[in-house]
Length: 232
Image 1 (cartoon, rainbow, N blue to C red):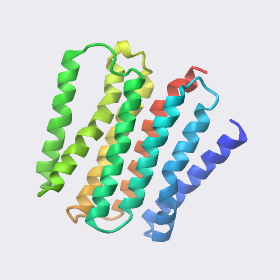
Image 2 (cartoon, one colour):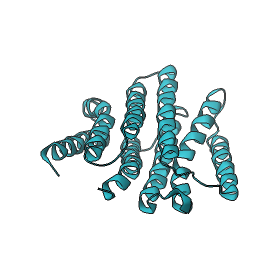
Image 3 (spheres, rainbow, N blue to C red):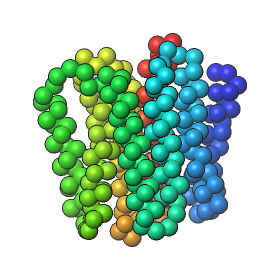
């Protein structure tokens, strides 16, 4: 690992440390200053890792858009008010769509598997409906949460599709990382909605939200980058 990669990794570790310390000990200045740079640093580490591989140019472009929208979502969610929350949610949804476009271009969905397509379709629709019912969302926001839930679940299930679809030629360990990252994202976002939309909380909820969110992004991005590192 060269000096640039070490520097980028150390900067990311520093930003994560500052953010989690700020969340755990309720020091807003630390969490607010560090949060907007988390996704740019994830992107920087990913692009540096891909720089000396055979990864296609489109991968870096789509990954840049995905993490740029997630960075924007982080910024909007730091602002108070319902419109900012919806805007942040929209930014994250768009970022996830870029993730999904990467999975399509990488060939995770090659081949015809009718049974898996049906099971995936049922899961990504039924699970958000159950969550909306259990968490008792009301009004227009429940439709936004439903749409976002479908897209986020599709990100997670893309990993499972890559694992079990032998025609995809994907790396099974990498696809498992995508699946687990998607689950971590779901858990983190459920807590965000539970706190911001329903007014609920528990001690250090912000720490749990951020730690699982950072883990989720790292797992998903690693799942995208790792196959190219193994092919060097």
